[in-house]
Length: 112
Length: 115
Image (cartoon, rainbow over all chains, first blue to last red; front, side, top):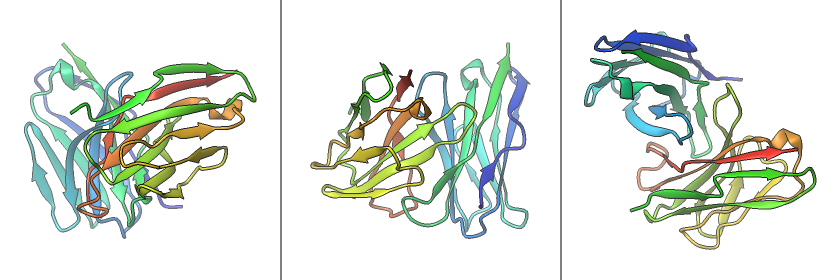
Protein backbone atom coordinates (compact mmCIF):
# COMPACT_ATOMS: atom_id res chain seq x y z
CA UNK A 1 0.00 0.00 0.00
CA UNK A 2 0.99 3.59 -0.29
CA UNK A 3 2.74 5.14 2.64
CA UNK A 4 4.57 8.11 4.01
CA UNK A 5 8.09 7.58 5.22
CA UNK A 6 11.08 9.44 6.55
CA UNK A 7 14.66 9.03 5.35
CA UNK A 8 16.42 9.56 8.69
CA UNK A 9 15.16 8.16 11.99
CA UNK A 10 17.51 10.36 14.09
CA UNK A 11 19.06 13.72 13.32
CA UNK A 12 21.61 15.41 15.58
CA UNK A 13 22.14 19.13 15.06
CA UNK A 14 24.30 21.70 16.80
CA UNK A 15 22.39 24.46 18.52
CA UNK A 16 22.12 27.47 16.23
CA UNK A 17 22.48 25.45 13.05
CA UNK A 18 19.67 24.83 10.59
CA UNK A 19 17.87 21.49 10.57
CA UNK A 20 16.37 19.73 7.60
CA UNK A 21 13.99 16.83 8.08
CA UNK A 22 12.91 14.90 5.02
CA UNK A 23 9.83 12.90 4.12
CA UNK A 24 8.97 10.81 1.08
CA UNK A 25 5.42 10.07 0.09
CA UNK A 26 4.14 7.68 -2.52
CA UNK A 27 0.47 8.60 -2.97
CA UNK A 28 0.25 10.99 -5.89
CA UNK A 29 -3.36 11.75 -4.94
CA UNK A 30 -2.31 13.42 -1.69
CA UNK A 31 -3.15 17.09 -1.72
CA UNK A 32 -2.46 18.25 1.80
CA UNK A 33 0.62 17.75 3.94
CA UNK A 34 1.26 18.51 7.56
CA UNK A 35 4.27 18.52 9.83
CA UNK A 36 3.78 17.69 13.49
CA UNK A 37 6.15 17.95 16.43
CA UNK A 38 5.86 15.46 19.27
CA UNK A 39 7.72 16.03 22.48
CA UNK A 40 8.33 13.16 24.85
CA UNK A 41 5.14 12.11 26.62
CA UNK A 42 2.95 14.53 24.72
CA UNK A 43 0.60 14.46 21.78
CA UNK A 44 1.57 15.65 18.30
CA UNK A 45 1.50 19.41 17.84
CA UNK A 46 0.84 21.11 14.51
CA UNK A 47 3.81 22.99 13.09
CA UNK A 48 3.04 23.89 9.53
CA UNK A 49 1.05 22.64 6.58
CA UNK A 50 1.14 22.96 2.83
CA UNK A 51 -1.30 22.26 0.05
CA UNK A 52 -0.35 20.54 -3.16
CA UNK A 53 -0.78 23.71 -5.21
CA UNK A 54 2.17 25.25 -3.36
CA UNK A 55 5.91 24.54 -3.43
CA UNK A 56 6.93 26.39 -0.32
CA UNK A 57 5.43 27.78 2.80
CA UNK A 58 7.11 29.67 5.60
CA UNK A 59 6.28 30.05 9.23
CA UNK A 60 8.18 31.34 12.20
CA UNK A 61 11.64 29.74 11.88
CA UNK A 62 10.16 26.88 9.89
CA UNK A 63 9.80 26.33 6.17
CA UNK A 64 8.14 23.44 4.39
CA UNK A 65 9.13 22.56 0.85
CA UNK A 66 7.07 20.33 -1.40
CA UNK A 67 8.47 18.69 -4.51
CA UNK A 68 5.63 16.91 -6.23
CA UNK A 69 7.85 15.69 -9.05
CA UNK A 70 9.82 13.41 -6.75
CA UNK A 71 7.13 13.19 -4.06
CA UNK A 72 9.30 14.72 -1.39
CA UNK A 73 8.51 16.92 1.56
CA UNK A 74 10.97 18.64 3.84
CA UNK A 75 10.86 20.68 7.01
CA UNK A 76 13.54 23.26 7.58
CA UNK A 77 14.09 24.70 11.03
CA UNK A 78 16.26 27.79 11.21
CA UNK A 79 18.61 28.46 14.14
CA UNK A 80 17.71 25.21 15.89
CA UNK A 81 17.17 25.55 19.62
CA UNK A 82 17.18 22.98 22.45
CA UNK A 83 13.40 23.34 22.63
CA UNK A 84 13.19 21.98 19.10
CA UNK A 85 14.31 18.57 20.31
CA UNK A 86 11.42 16.24 19.58
CA UNK A 87 10.12 13.70 17.09
CA UNK A 88 8.83 15.23 13.90
CA UNK A 89 6.13 13.53 11.82
CA UNK A 90 5.00 14.28 8.34
CA UNK A 91 1.47 13.40 7.37
CA UNK A 92 -0.40 13.38 4.11
CA UNK A 93 -4.08 13.56 3.33
CA UNK A 94 -5.06 11.63 0.24
CA UNK A 95 -8.76 12.23 0.48
CA UNK A 96 -11.25 12.03 3.29
CA UNK A 97 -11.01 12.44 7.02
CA UNK A 98 -9.90 8.86 7.39
CA UNK A 99 -7.20 9.17 4.78
CA UNK A 100 -4.50 10.90 6.77
CA UNK A 101 -1.34 8.81 6.76
CA UNK A 102 1.40 9.51 9.27
CA UNK A 103 5.07 8.81 8.85
CA UNK A 104 7.06 7.00 11.50
CA UNK A 105 8.87 10.13 12.65
CA UNK A 106 12.37 11.56 12.85
CA UNK A 107 13.94 12.29 16.20
CA UNK A 108 15.72 15.62 16.26
CA UNK A 109 18.43 15.97 18.89
CA UNK A 110 19.85 19.42 19.47
CA UNK A 111 23.38 19.48 20.84
CA UNK A 112 23.99 22.49 23.12
CA UNK B 1 -9.72 26.70 25.95
CA UNK B 2 -8.36 23.43 27.28
CA UNK B 3 -8.30 22.00 23.76
CA UNK B 4 -8.41 18.21 23.63
CA UNK B 5 -8.25 16.44 26.99
CA UNK B 6 -7.85 12.75 27.68
CA UNK B 7 -8.22 10.59 30.77
CA UNK B 8 -6.65 8.57 32.22
CA UNK B 9 -3.01 9.37 31.47
CA UNK B 10 -1.88 5.84 32.21
CA UNK B 11 -3.60 2.55 32.88
CA UNK B 12 -2.62 -1.08 33.38
CA UNK B 13 -5.19 -3.69 32.41
CA UNK B 14 -5.28 -7.44 32.77
CA UNK B 15 -6.10 -9.52 29.74
CA UNK B 16 -9.85 -9.69 29.27
CA UNK B 17 -10.65 -6.58 31.26
CA UNK B 18 -12.53 -3.69 29.75
CA UNK B 19 -12.14 0.05 30.01
CA UNK B 20 -13.17 3.31 28.44
CA UNK B 21 -10.70 5.95 27.36
CA UNK B 22 -12.21 9.37 27.72
CA UNK B 23 -11.77 12.24 25.27
CA UNK B 24 -13.26 15.70 25.34
CA UNK B 25 -12.76 18.86 23.31
CA UNK B 26 -14.02 22.36 24.00
CA UNK B 27 -13.38 23.86 20.57
CA UNK B 28 -16.79 22.94 19.17
CA UNK B 29 -15.09 20.79 16.55
CA UNK B 30 -17.28 18.57 14.43
CA UNK B 31 -14.67 15.92 13.70
CA UNK B 32 -13.00 13.70 16.24
CA UNK B 33 -10.55 10.83 15.88
CA UNK B 34 -8.91 8.06 17.84
CA UNK B 35 -5.39 6.91 16.98
CA UNK B 36 -2.99 4.45 18.47
CA UNK B 37 0.75 4.88 18.38
CA UNK B 38 3.00 1.88 18.75
CA UNK B 39 6.74 2.29 19.41
CA UNK B 40 8.60 3.32 16.27
CA UNK B 41 5.40 3.41 14.25
CA UNK B 42 3.24 6.13 12.81
CA UNK B 43 -0.21 6.91 14.15
CA UNK B 44 -2.90 4.48 13.07
CA UNK B 45 -6.55 5.57 12.88
CA UNK B 46 -8.92 3.44 14.95
CA UNK B 47 -12.25 5.26 14.61
CA UNK B 48 -13.42 8.69 13.64
CA UNK B 49 -16.58 10.76 13.85
CA UNK B 50 -17.79 13.61 11.67
CA UNK B 51 -20.48 14.70 14.09
CA UNK B 52 -22.66 13.69 17.00
CA UNK B 53 -24.30 10.37 16.32
CA UNK B 54 -21.99 9.52 13.41
CA UNK B 55 -18.98 7.23 13.72
CA UNK B 56 -16.98 5.16 11.29
CA UNK B 57 -14.11 2.69 11.28
CA UNK B 58 -10.58 3.64 10.55
CA UNK B 59 -7.63 1.47 9.67
CA UNK B 60 -7.43 -0.64 12.86
CA UNK B 61 -10.91 -0.81 14.48
CA UNK B 62 -10.93 -4.43 15.69
CA UNK B 63 -11.24 -4.74 19.46
CA UNK B 64 -12.56 -1.21 19.93
CA UNK B 65 -15.86 0.60 19.95
CA UNK B 66 -16.79 4.26 20.05
CA UNK B 67 -19.80 6.47 20.57
CA UNK B 68 -20.46 10.14 19.93
CA UNK B 69 -23.60 11.25 21.70
CA UNK B 70 -22.47 14.89 21.92
CA UNK B 71 -20.09 17.16 20.04
CA UNK B 72 -17.74 17.41 23.00
CA UNK B 73 -17.13 13.77 23.94
CA UNK B 74 -15.78 10.82 22.01
CA UNK B 75 -15.04 7.85 24.29
CA UNK B 76 -13.16 4.78 23.10
CA UNK B 77 -14.17 1.43 24.57
CA UNK B 78 -12.00 -1.68 24.88
CA UNK B 79 -14.21 -4.64 25.70
CA UNK B 80 -11.72 -7.52 26.08
CA UNK B 81 -8.24 -6.14 26.50
CA UNK B 82 -5.45 -8.04 24.75
CA UNK B 83 -1.67 -7.56 24.94
CA UNK B 84 -1.74 -6.38 21.31
CA UNK B 85 -3.67 -3.33 22.51
CA UNK B 86 -0.73 -2.12 24.58
CA UNK B 87 -0.07 1.26 23.02
CA UNK B 88 -0.41 4.99 23.42
CA UNK B 89 -3.82 6.27 22.41
CA UNK B 90 -4.38 9.75 21.07
CA UNK B 91 -7.64 11.52 20.58
CA UNK B 92 -7.78 14.37 18.08
CA UNK B 93 -10.29 16.82 16.71
CA UNK B 94 -10.67 19.15 13.77
CA UNK B 95 -13.23 21.80 12.95
CA UNK B 96 -14.58 20.21 9.81
CA UNK B 97 -15.04 23.62 8.25
CA UNK B 98 -12.29 23.13 5.67
CA UNK B 99 -13.20 19.58 4.83
CA UNK B 100 -10.26 17.28 4.67
CA UNK B 101 -7.73 20.06 4.22
CA UNK B 102 -7.36 21.00 7.83
CA UNK B 103 -5.26 20.42 10.89
CA UNK B 104 -6.07 17.97 13.63
CA UNK B 105 -5.46 18.95 17.25
CA UNK B 106 -4.28 16.19 19.54
CA UNK B 107 -4.76 15.40 23.18
CA UNK B 108 -1.86 14.41 25.48
CA UNK B 109 -2.47 10.69 25.09
CA UNK B 110 -3.34 7.70 27.27
CA UNK B 111 -0.69 5.06 27.84
CA UNK B 112 -2.24 1.62 28.11
CA UNK B 113 -0.42 -1.51 29.21
CA UNK B 114 -2.20 -4.85 28.95
CA UNK B 115 -0.64 -7.70 30.91
